[in-house]
Length: 238
Image (cartoon, rainbow, N blue to C red; front, side, top):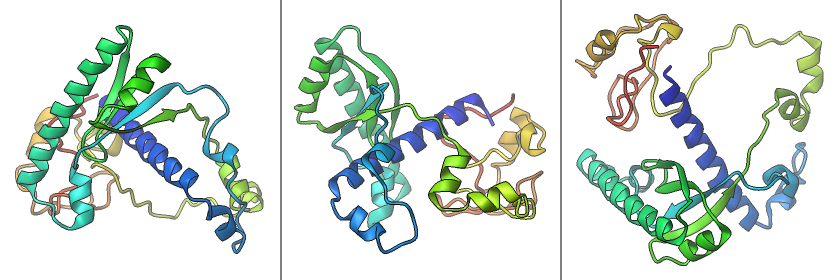
């Protein structure tokens, strides 16, 4: 998988986490609900790292392809127009940010999952842009260290992990993501641009397995080929 794709997947994960955390913070009943389960209640420390934010997520007021899917009104032509609209809005808000802070850094953006800009800027600029009519909200982003041990402890599964009796070696993993380049060498593919392009000739049928990838489906385009083919992402050849 290309570094570009890895970064985009990480960004999508981060954006999802930030948006979900925002919803959790607004939901005062979550700890009450968790009392009726065997899980450890989520504390504020679990949701927001105590360190200073490493960046900020500027959420814009726009409709994305993901919104259309959720409402059951998704069409490819509308999704493409939405993508273009979000990009235009991002450019406008980005220009506004630079007038508020000449040292602002735009670290990334998302257009399909959510209409966002990921930025580093002065607090004054962030406060001002949060009042912009094109901006829905501004959320802090924190750096996290992910540890499997912490997850196991949270679901009270540490004894199973440490005993070594259940390794998961016989399990099949299903991944829901933007797509997968099964022609990449890391998955047992050819790892060439030619192989990547050839794989997309007929999206209605794919011969499985493809290397280590046992199967898949494109739920956004409703076809049998789950290959990553967003036009903004180049094929992975490394």
